[in-house]
Length: 333
Image 1: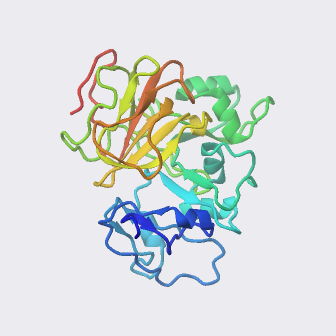
Image 2: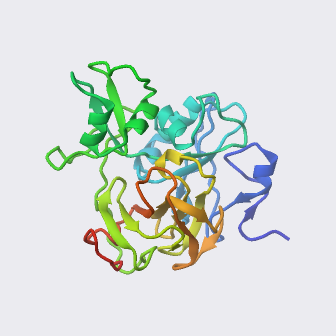
Image 3: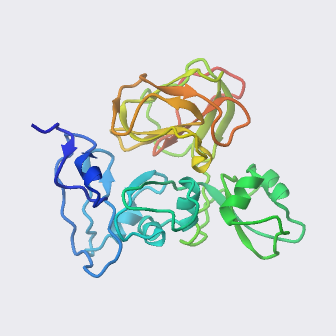
């Protein structure tokens, strides 16, 4: 007798037997597994399985019989999970997801580009940031102040040492944001880095769909980065699921994790995702179904923080706390 959400014979991401035995299909309502169309038999890298928010698996073949059209239509703000297969290289995986190698290294706390092994689970974060070309007088400290980022993060992400910055060098500022006076239109900076984006309050507004993950918490920072707000509360304060869904990431290893520290990501039935970071601990695990308002973890100070708070992001929809005032206790719209 098989559990309705278990898959024993088909696991597109991994050749690992243990991973195959514990494969998880997001929902029993997922209609059909759709075969790859016009796959290139000489391709060295596997193709990631594309899904449409727990509703259906997306065909690999676009109108021209290729994966390109499908990949370009996939929202760029969604977080992906990939299990490394035998023979994979980090550059192939990065190319598959159209992100930089550094994006994967930084988000998974890898020691080097060779620090990947079959069976490893990689988080593919579309990390927000801006590109900056170094000019005379620039320092890491000044760049961090200019873009509201962290000097150590900039150095780590770009592989910099203590030497002065070289004029003309292009740097990625992880988590950096353009000032209000700067152009708000995202600008492409090449597939080997990533697109500079400030998500702001973008996305469809879903009245009443999301709840406040930390009821009674004080807003300490309004919309920033990837459509996130900060909710100040004492360490150990309960954190609740903003909406019903399935846990696709539950990192509680105390690692940096791209600045998020301990964090959880929930995918919802409308294809949106919510992210809860800097947690002290998580009480849920990968593949678990949660109800709206269910306890999922506790407020902490892991990752990039200056004090105890929850960083709460909504990907694919408007943040329900986007209109809240700093210093106020706010209710979700």
